[in-house]
Amino acid sequence: MAIAREATEQIRARMEWLAAVGERLVIDADVHPSARQSLPAPIAERIADDPNYYHGRPLLEEDLERTLDHAGVDAALCWQNPAVTLYVDDPEENARRLGAANEDIARLGRRLPQRVIPAGWTDPKALGTAAAVALAERCVQELAMPVVKMNPAQNAYPIDDPMVMDVVDAIVALGAVAAFHFGADTPYTSVEGLAAVAERHPEHPLIAVHMGGGGAAFVEAEATYQGARALGLRRSNLFYVLSAKRDTHIESALISYAAAGAPWRHNIAAASDTPYSGMVWNFAAFRALFETLREGATHGDPRLAADPTLFDEDTIAGFMGGNLAKLIVEADRRILERGTGT
Image (cartoon, rainbow, N blue to C red; front, side, top):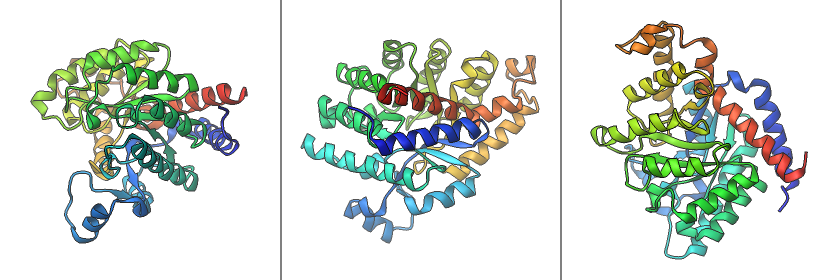
């Protein structure tokens, strides 16, 4: 199937924008906005009646720009919020619901083309493999999404299950980038499973969101944190998004990648996982951390003590958004080449 004409125009415009200014943009690589009109009634009612925060409380589309501005964030990679896309026991209905959630993100991307990088979502277990592949193809070729995500933890399937590999193959064939929730919060996203996915297409990028974090307790997550870091420094196609992860491990991971040099220092990006965490809080923390690292404060880390200049302006800009911008530009270029021949 060829790329839709409107999608081609969107992809080309995004690619040109990010190629021109992306290396200096601040980009949150993990945001889940929701359209108010699409919320299930119980969630919409709770927002209206309950002023307290609860896990997964939606970030409404109308609040996104204000949140970005307050956080000092130029743009965000946005995908649907699984907490408000409720599955049933009917794969066809699940495909309809998840398709509608992707459409909401695509509309937001069209309305805010230089604030929102729209990303898709599919699910081979809830939809069935064929429908999951079809939705991934639609996300890329109709909705102009350069990234398509799966969440094995959410719906209880192994990250390296054969049905997942079929979907990954389809995403790669389109030129887009597959992304995964990758955390220590369930047994479904193991380091070994992620390694199998990364090794399937070793020359093609793969995004692992949370770098082993997610919702796990700190002690329980330790082995996954360590394994994720070691795997990422072996596999140059693996791109990590630093959200929902212990702050001390975020710092250590950033030092590891800066010290490793190219291409590794281009394979990691700051993020918040809003609304599961706070964008303003996270990006204020990232800025404070990078300022400390730029000054060469070691916190006992021998790598920074050996080279206190690791965190130069370009490296920090890459971590804060430039690395993700480059990944998206390259994905958009592949999508256009494979889908239109240009």
